[in-house]
Amino acid sequence: MINQILVVDDEKGIANAIAYALRREGYEVDTAYNGNIALEKAGQLSSFIMILDIMMPEKDGYIVCRELRKMQSKQIGIILLTAKNDIVDKVLGLELGADDYVTKPFDIRELLARVNSLARRLSDRDMKSSDILQVGSLTIAKSQRNAIIDGDQLTLTPKEFDLLVLLFSNQERVFSREELLELIWGDDYYGGTRTVDIHIQRLRKKLGMGGQHMLKTVYKIGYKASVRE
Image (cartoon, rainbow, N blue to C red):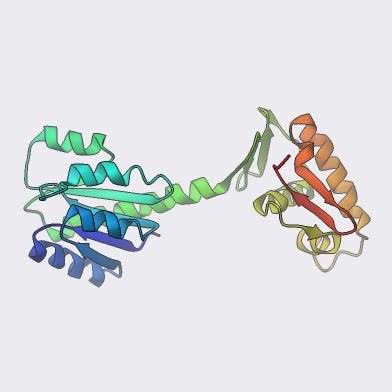
């Protein structure tokens, strides 16, 4: 679950009080007292939640929120803090990409509950996205043990599916036949490496014209998955 929090408020007393409460909950917390420093610190983090005051000098919370949503490679949750009770301000914040908002003055227990809830939602979203492996026109849903290429569902045996996931989860890595045999079939399997060759041949056939070229034979070594032409 996401554990890093960045608290941003130009009122240092409020920011530090929130940070103290969050640290007692077990979160790793940093603070920033203006929008510029907030964005600078956000650039050094990967997955985090920002508790962001709207009314700040220089760059206000709306500008910071807009800039954060441009960081598409990051998993970021945003909770806005606002002294205003105007629905227009709240709607604007949500439209700019905020996940939630709390109106000042607030009960710290409510803020903690919202942080915990958002952290769980982001973690669930992260798990779902990591479950899907997209490689060109090939889509692999790991937990559902389902693979689709060019809109057509593949009918795979359990070992074929495991082999597909292993190779495409480690693109460009070359696996020897012995490695694949050990990783997919296990130490207690007494068949030869010809088993691997047969399964690769079957996979290529099932992937068809849209995907068979992505399974490469590495001469005298083994196989790898690659989307490079």
